[in-house]
Length: 420
Image 1: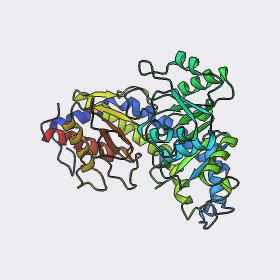
Image 2: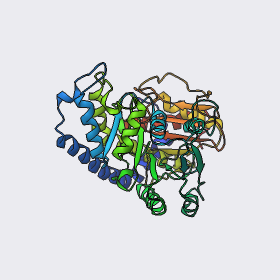
Image 3: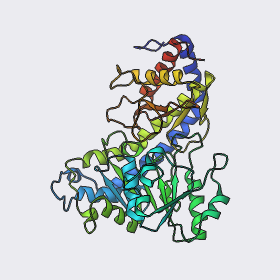
């Protein structure tokens, strides 16, 4: 019996079975979590983090010791030369755009080797949108190498690389696609392949949803630049806004000049008392990512037992925190998201409905009862209302809260006669 919530016996039994199936995966996740936690802890100790690093700065923010040391801690954790960690990155897309505009110049060429990237970056590149100041508007060329059977097409990548290519862009996570997310080793293979042909190519990775899922990060296998959001994995559910860019120092410096202004770069930027949550978010991130991974594995096992298509399957190796769930029709999709929302600690009474969400080409339904608006390290479920009617689930600050949300989603579908 599950206390406080009404879950029928059929769903309870399915939950017990799912938990039994997930034991080995949970053990593996714990091992990776501990490794990454020790890595972060070692960086904090090496740089002697203290209360003084949390002191607020205002105005120009000159000499903000906490801000400057935070960048060093991140660079240490991600095993790279430098990092730019700031609360004033408004979202992951803004962070990625800052990196792209920071290092690319008119006449350069960006080649995405993971097919068409996530919807919200289209306007940044110029795939869609007119007169918004996209890369295309500034004379930066774009091309892509389609995936082959949902995997990287290394033959296609080799053929696409020549002296005209300035940057190879890799999206680690699947976005609203059903292809597998990329492992760090696969990213390393791309780096090796393209740099063998042209050593001057900049390899940039959209690292969103992937931080701390494995023991290694893309910067450790040849990526020159990575970027992500602090309201996803890397903020640990503590950071309430922000993003990070990490990699080669010369490239990070260029990104800093884009974020602030040429000549000032990383030297300015008041932290307004937010240093503490950025430090604390990084410290919590490995554990929180582990909880999110357990949540994804459990949801996969639970809904596969009901006969739904899931990707990845509960026993597959994971390279991001995203779980895809094939719900077969719009009604089930909406009911699932409404069930997730009903168990959320915030806005549980809200009934999600499909709407025209900015940056997407179809209506989207989203369950996101989070302490931080839009946070996807907290449990959320969203889906474009289009075939093949998959929901994308990510996050879970702790496994136990995510588990009850998943059970309530199944119960919501059952109550409406939709659960298989």
